[in-house]
Image (cartoon, rainbow, N blue to C red; front, side, top):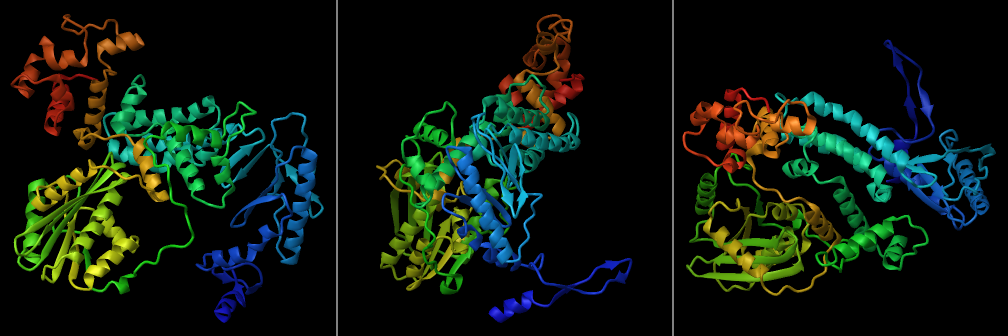
Length: 610
C-alpha cells in the first residue's frame, strides 16, 4: 500500500498546451493530484495534526484547508495574547511542513457587545493580519455583535437574484405549472434562505422578516395569485411551510443530534440550567423553548450516536433471500387505477407464489400522523387453508417505517416457530422503503431474523401496492390499526427516528386536490376565484380602488366569484351550457378535475378576466 501511494505522489510532471504548442514538462513537488479520488483523504491525513498543535484555551474548526481559530476571554487583551500564541504555533507548523499560508485571505475579528473592547494586532510570521468587522466561514457571515444582519442581507440578495428564474418560467396565462415552479423554488432559491439557519435563527425579527418576504414573493410567482392574496392561503395550497417553522424544525433536529453525542460540549449546555444575563436569545434558549413546547408529542429518550455500527449480514451472506421491489406493469402515481393494480398484483401472486406451494405472509404497519402510537399487523395464510393473525403495539413514539419493519420482524419470528411443513414462504409488504433498506443492508436485525427463517425455508420478500383492494394487504392494514390502539409501551428512539418525527410534526398536512394537475392558466384562475382576490369589480374596488363600483354589469349585486358562477343573469346561457343542472359553488371550485375544467371553460366562454 505504501509503495502504491508513493508512486501516486512521486515523479508527477505537468505541462501546458497553448495553440497546439506544448511547453516543457515541470516536476510537481508539492500538493496532491487535483481531481484524484484519493487526494482529499491524503490531504486530510497530512493536515490532521495541525489542530493538536494549538495551545491550551484555543478552539479550532478545520474543514479541508479552511481553518478557523478562536478563544473566549473576558478581556480583549487576554484574547489577543492567546490568539498570538496560536498564530505562532500555526506559523511554526507551516514552516516545519513546507506549507504556505495565504496571509491575504487570513484575517481577525473581535466579537464583543462592548464598545470599550479594542482588538489587538495579531501577526502571522511577522505580517500583521487584517482586522475585519465581519468574517465568513463556510458560507456563513459572522459580524462583530452577532446580529447576523450581514449574513441575512447576503442570503436575501442571492435568493432574489434567483427569483428571476421563476419569472422566466411562467406568466399568468402561460408557462410551467405550480408543481414545476415549486420544485425550482425548493431546489434553487429556498436553500439560500435557510443555509446555516440553526446559527442565525435567533436574529432580530425584523431581519428574519426580510427572508420571509422573499418566500412570499416566490409564492405569488408559483401560484399566480394577486399581491393582496393572504400568505396562509398560498402556503396551504402549495404545502410550502413558513420559513419560521422550518427554522424551528432544524433547530430541534440540531439540538437532538447534539444531545446524542456523548462527548460533545454542547450536550452539557443543553442539559444544564441556562444563564439569562442578557435579553438576547441563543441557540440553547431556543432549543429548550421548543423542547418544552413539544414535550407531549416528542420522545424524551433518544439513543446515543456511536461510531460503532452493528454488524450487518452482507448480501453475499444472505443466500436464498430474494427481494422483489416491483410488480410487472404496475406503475407509480396516478397513471393507473386501483382496479388495474389489484388485477396485476393478484395475477403475479397466483402465478409466482401459488397458495398450494407457498406460505403467504402479509404485513403492514401504521402510526397516527406517521409518528405516534405504532401498530404492526400480520396475516399468515398456510397452504392447508388455515390462517394466523397478530396485532402488535410497536411503541408510543413510532414512525410508519419502524412499524412496517417491526411487522416483518414479528412475522419472521412467527414463521420460524411454525411447524407447517411448507418449504417456501413469501412476505408480501407494501413498505417499499423497508424492502429497499433491507436490500442495501441497512436493517441488520431484520436481516438476521430472515436469515434464521432461511435456515429451514426458501424466503422471498415481494413488494405489493397499497390500498388497491388486495384482500391480504387490506386485512393486514386492519390488524395494524388494531395494534396501534393497544396500550403502547414507552420506547427509546434513534436519532434518525427522532429526526423523522420532528419533520413529520412540522410538515403541513396535504389533501387531494386536482388543482395540482391542471395547466398554468387554469391554476391561476382557480386560486384567484377560490381566495376572492381577483380582478372582478368587488375586489378591485374595495382593495385597490381601481374599479368605479363593486357592482356587476347586471346591476343586481357585487361582482364576486359566487355571483358570476351562480347567479349573474348576464351569464345564464354560458352557465347552462357548462352546467345543465344546478351545481353547488363548492363543487365548481373544489371538485374533481372534470368539474374544475368546466369552471375554467365557463370563465373563458364568458370572456371574464379574473
